[in-house]
Image 1: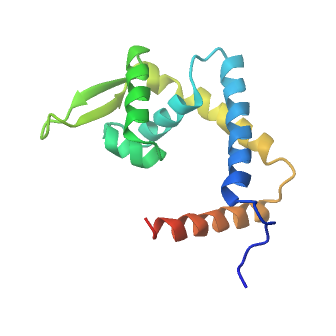
Image 2 (image 1 turned 180 degrees about the horizontal axis):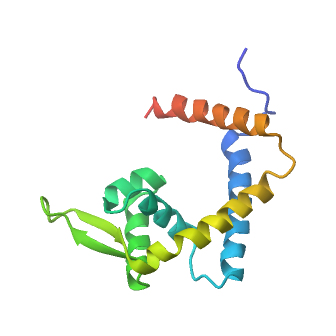
Image 3 (image 1 turned 180 degrees about the vertical axis):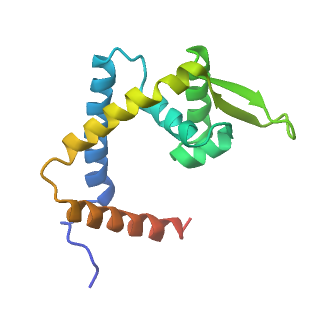
Amino acid sequence: MPNNQFKRGELYSFITGVASTAIARRMQKKFNEAGLNLSIEQWSVLYHLWKKDGISQQELCKASFRDKPSITRLVDNMEKTGLVKRVAAANDRRVNLIYLTKDGQQLQEQTLKLADQTLMEALRGVPVDKVDVCKQTLQVVYDNLAKLT
């Protein structure tokens, strides 16, 4: 018997997608209220660059689960607004490395604080052990599907 407690037609992606969308909307509202001209998609790129600055667009695609055209568009827009800059890799000029600008770096503290506030709002009333079980379960689901690609 399959380990599926969902009714027919319900999908994990739908359930997690609804929660993810609600969190993203709340976070976007917080960014807007703080006067930040920054989309959630742009923030996710910044987030990965804060973890490791100077990565390639391909690495950004993989880290953010976005396709190449989406990352190219995001980086183009972020470059225009002065949040990131492209630098050709020294060993392969066909590869663009993406670096944070000073403006991009300065958004880290404020936006991470807003993200933490949003997550605390989202998880209000959820026991820590339940959050841990959920994270472990979603990791297993991801790992199972990653093996198939």
